[in-house]
Length: 124
Image (cartoon, rainbow, N blue to C red):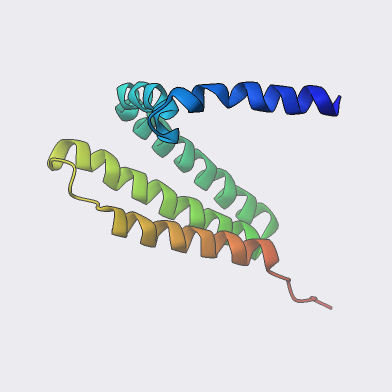
């Protein structure tokens, strides 16, 4: 089994020998992703809104702060993608630069980190 795994691994590396760089194999995937870019932005925005509403509903049902933090993360995620969608229509793609996206993603990760490691106080 191990020999077959090594053989499969080395066979999968053969196209890299003929590529100008390791990123050349990704070019068809990237061009395909660009063709679906606008649709993907709308789908991610709607999916993040749905997850936000599910987290808020779970918060009101359980009163757990974890769900509130998760809802906050998804609300930031939805807001970021709303700005990206507005960027399609209001500006030539420079409305939300990468640095701003990184700040959004940092806050989203902080919210999720705190929600994951948050220890609720005992209510005894």
